[in-house]
Length: 138
Image 1 (cartoon, rainbow, N blue to C red):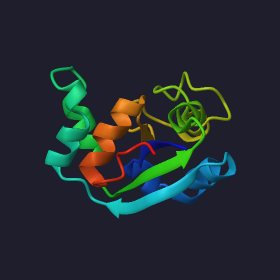
Image 2 (cartoon, one colour):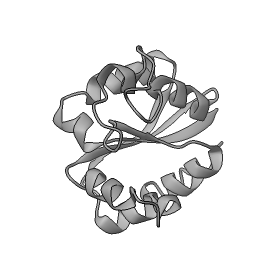
Image 3 (cartoon, rainbow, N blue to C red):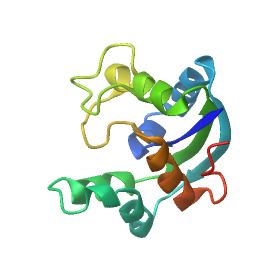
Image 4 (cartoon, helix red, strand yellow):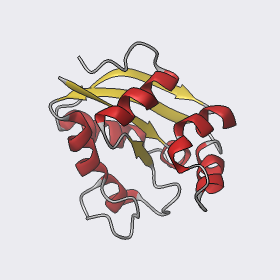
């Protein structure tokens, strides 16, 4: 089975959408292997978003993800990265298809409810920041 890393952002937590979003993943056959409620430090956020360092929206990302508690998850399932990306929808909730998490609940492009790894390599790098040892794909 494949694995992926997901963060339910502060807006998902504050709006009471954690259970709904996790249920969608589970109904699609994804199994949570690790789950943690955590307030990210600026340092952790900088590690997570290091690929965006230097881009105009970088500081906004750090501010949004550290604004409140998040739910960190490692999910396992068949083609987990691809399945989660389809379930969450486009980064911009305005462009996300209805029926996707961002399409149904997203309000803002920066704090768009969910962060999810976009590749196996990203999963390995991102999950290692928060869940040491789970970054192995099998």
